Structure formats: C-alpha cells, structure tokens
Length: 296
Image (tube, rainbow, N blue to C red):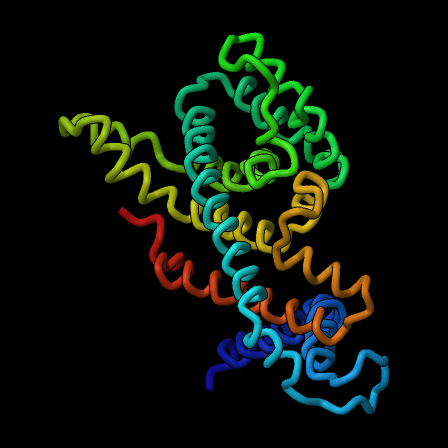
C-alpha cells in the first residue's frame, strides 16, 4: 500500500475515534434521561400491586383491564381524533401563514417582525398561555362580547369554555407556530429561478403552486405536522384548564391515575400513548418519504 494511502486511512481512523468520543456524552445523556425511564415505565406497567417494590410480581393484568373496558379504548379514540383535527387545522393555517410571510411580504424586516410576533407567546410557559385563554372563552369573555358587539348573537353562549371547542381553539393557537416555522424555513430556500422558469413556460399560478411549491415544501409540512402530532398527543394542561376536567384524553388519564397512586395502570396508559405516538410517526414517515423530498 502506498504511504500516502496508509496515512489517509490512519487519519480517517483518528477522526472516527474522536467522533465517537464527542458523541459519548450525548449518548449517555439519552440513555440515562430517555431510554432508562421508558424501560422503567414499561416494567412498572407489568406490576401486579400498587406498592413500589423491585421484586413486585409481573403480569398482564392491567393490560387486560385496559382492553376489557371500552371506556379506555374510547379515550384512546378521542385522543387520536383530537390530534387529527388539530393537525388538519394547523396544516391549513400554518401553510397559509408561511406562504404569506415568504411569498407576499417583500421586505425582510417585515418578515422578521411577523415571525417575531408569532414567537412572542412562547416566551411564557404553557400553563400561563393556557390560563390566559380563560378570560377570552368565558360567558362574559372577549369572544362573546365581540360577537354581541358585531350583532351576531343576542346573548352570551357557553360553547367556548369547558368544551371541546374551547380546547381546540386554545390548542390551535398554541401549535400553529409549530406547523408554520418549518414551512417558512423550507419555503425560503426555494430558488426563485425555479418559479420564474415555470412562469416563463406559461404555467398557471395554481400549477406553479401545486406542482412546484407544495412538493418542495413537503419536508417542512411533514416536520411541522410531526411536532403538532407529538405535542397534542401528550397535551394534558389544555384539557384540564380549558375543559374543566370534563373532557379527558390519555395525558389527563395518566396524571389522574398517578395522583391516585395507581402507578402500574398509569404506566400502562403511558405505554399505550407512546405506542400510538410511535405508530403515528412511522405511518407519516412511510406515507411521505422524507429522504426523497425536495426534488422536482
């Protein structure tokens, strides 16, 4: 083997060793902070008693209980349905907002200002943002008073607070930015020459949008919807505060069971929720292959 090739291979080995060392802290952190807790939750879900003991007998009792009672399966369906509704709404609103910011706002300063205004609510905690919605949704809240002022209703209506409508409205305001940001980033990277070439070939604005803009922005759409999906599936604060504990989802049930000391059954619901999340992510990545996106 020539000396220069031997030197090159040695350099590659040294760089590989350094890469492993650099990745070691993050790997240990992921194992200790994510993998080990998940394995512990799965283990606790097989416990037969509520007592915390390392030698607790294991069985499928709580999993059988979950599938024997339709109320729990119905709760899974409600959680998935609410997530699908939020994904649809945030997809439309987020894409429209991204298209307006990137395609219609000409000055960069105004684009940054709009993005900045979207980010401001996220400077506060999720709990504060949730509680702040209550004065808007109440019987005498801002929404009812505005509708009365516009003459659309004669007296306040109670469909906004402590209802699925109120939960949906609050969640849309929380998670639309997650669907908007990735699309803005991807859409800004589309070369203007591609759109101009399509226009020179007499393509209509609709065809330019549907055949070029949408396919090239699919990576942003997918990433945004993944963020919305995972966050809505795990959301419990919005349903508790805005729904007044009248409407439960998987996240609320986990918290309720934990507070009542039913650790094994709470772990079962947590495992089911994680399985639903993994299945949803796998389906989305299978339907839209992100490795083949972004090409004309």
